[in-house]
Image (tube, rainbow, N blue to C red; front, side, top):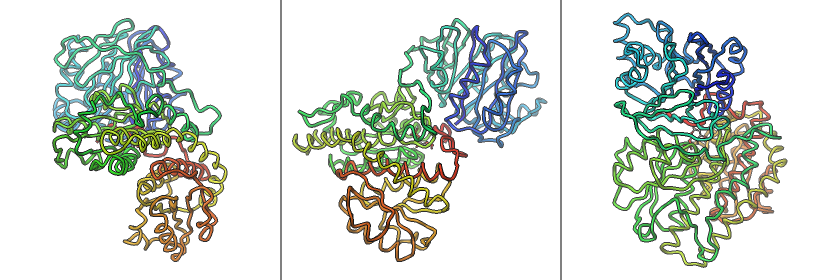
Length: 607
Ligand code: G6P
């Protein structure tokens, strides 16, 4: 989603800002812009619709030592040059970049229009520039403080002014802002990856805080303009994006990184002797764990699908009633949080607005809340204060792959820890530990099938529809497989429980609608073969995922993807790894922009 970068120091601001924008590209956006204060203080602004590559030629004329830049994901107003940020006030003295949505912008705009202010764009963000200009009386921080006092909604902003050379003022409420402390100046960004190359340490602003940044000083203030002492933390080494390497796309690289990512998630957390998982970040005593009566998992997109696999784990392994909530619905449903409920929000980025809202609702209702996140220091991780980090390394491709796999593994470790805390004996625990330890190898065995999967994917690349069906813990795997395909190939794909297919969707089957059937050797396999028969009877081609050298599927189809033998707990992991490759190769055959699919954003910071 939208990205912010700002720099002030003695280096060429344009170069650093453009580099920052390129590092933010993965988030998904549709226009970009940059504003740099020149030697005379004058603000030079260039913007363009489309990718940063289109902005680049325009930036050669823009020079200075301080500036702000933005990638925009359109909410209010189409993606166009005029709607791109930065936005300036009428006199061109103040420039603003904004992430989030100003919910009361219509009334603010109406009042500014009555005062004769002229608007150039259709965005909600432009009101911020005009308000700061209205409140400016020589002190930029004060003008920003007064402005944010008028704003309702979510924002992360960065502001520069012609009258304040070398100064950037930024503020946050519900949309991340990180200040980077560097050797040759200071920076601000909405995402730590944009400043990792220049800054060693960072300050994560909290909601309501404002930072006043100059080349050699950063001052943080609260919402009423009183200075506060910020927490300065080191940038985690795993933040640094090491590029695509030999791979055509980040997505393929991240799929192939999964054995290592899984090993990192598991590292130091499994105890063979005790037959359990040790998750220190959970910060719960055995007694507190034993008291948990209900688990509620909340997430969006792939994270929600991981949560649905987790539901099976918690009920099957630990015997704790578990439900999965679409994070977006959670707080609006007035959810019943019984005493001793553990809420587990899952978010790769740790910044998804809906999941964050669910966290706040759960905290307000008195639940114990433990996050599963990949980004150290992210808002959700910090607000929960307890949980488990994935340590999967940066995920750059918009479509989640390694984060999903590591989320599932983490949920299995959690279920194991809770299971051992109640009904599971040491031997059973040790068996699950052994299975978890084998996950990196099992994923590697799936990746070894890449060529076979590619050939099957290419065979179906011209189609426009697909169904995915699964049962048990492979039902969420079917949902995730279908999501991957639609995200990156734009093929209309739907995931269904195999038994649900005949309650409606079967009407759509035909020779141009292939069905990916997850027929792994887990309970329910026999029934899956009946479901495959139902599809074939409607002339739908079937692509079967099966376990090892299972020959049964050969009776039905020649398009078979083989995943290594494993228990029902690990089956979703190896199956989704195979479906990720299938989606990737199919999208690649269709020449799709795999890492940054149209309309999608990596981290969705608006509700
Ligand atoms: C976006 C991404 C998805 C992701 C979802 C949740 O829609 O495109 O890949 O699964 O957000 O993101 P989170 O960071 O909370 O896991």
